[in-house]
Image 1: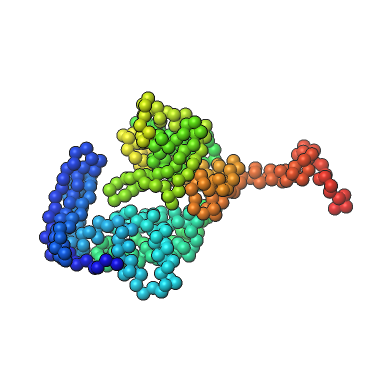
Image 2 (image 1 turned 90 degrees about the horizontal axis):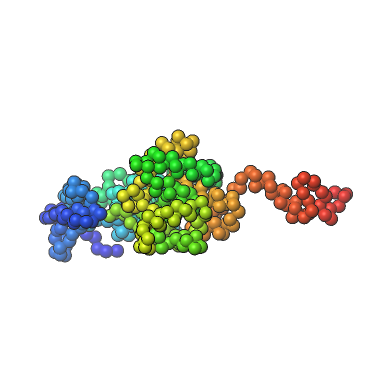
Length: 409
């Protein structure tokens, strides 16, 4: 563990804001001071969309420094901060307890929340992370241990003055766990029934969006038919799609970071191949054609109307999602429901579970198996399939005795 940093009380801080023309976030705010321990020059900086945001960021750091908070710690992402204070956060725990806590920190907290600055971790972000851990197949005790270590790290952040309340102290999460499990066990309740429903929803969302931007409908159709997350759809580049075999090399996603939206590897770092069905191939070709006759292979396949990255929140706001799905009778449908839709359809189509797991990118086979709840028509046809297997000459229009069956039974 690195030596403790000297409290920042009495630091002589100098600040400046630099405008960098042509950058997506052009206003870079920077704070500089002399380290009271080593006497070296230290600085922190962050880029912002507007000068007002940059000034507010500097003012926040000044107030924290005046209260004795190290400005370096004030801008650390959660993953880096937690690693720094882990010994203090874990004090008093026995080895049999600390080991599963550390596993939860490494395998779940850091991949899901580690990129967020500590002060931006909200109750909502924690809720979504917990649901994600459950969807990935984490058991009740695993989720409990993961939340416990997150609570301890955020409690240390309270002591350091970085946050006022601890967003990891969620109550009733066991009920949320049972609710999420019930939803996942009945994934069909979260899915659209067929292509016509998906197609109609996509058209309705486009009609409700500003300017009727067709791209929103393309994103919805593509996500529904590939069982992909919205961030993964946003990350698709032209080079990722093979229009000869119609396979998508899914290898990146768009996600949030301290500096804004970035592209990074997929969840769990699982590169996977996803088939593109005929229903969405024309829209893929249309998107490629928009890039010109000789497109750059790194051009994004799906963007917003101004060429920007897409997130689930952007899609929701741009299309008035909540209003549209309610009007269509799909109040249950969230953007993630498009992924449930695709996986449910594939399961109904008879895609083997080991193949479905690879397409979905699930870490646990038990997560994939939740989608294997066949429709009633498939259940009722099972007896006919068994009868034909036992007696190839049997027909539903003229049932016969099973070959070799004893008349005494």
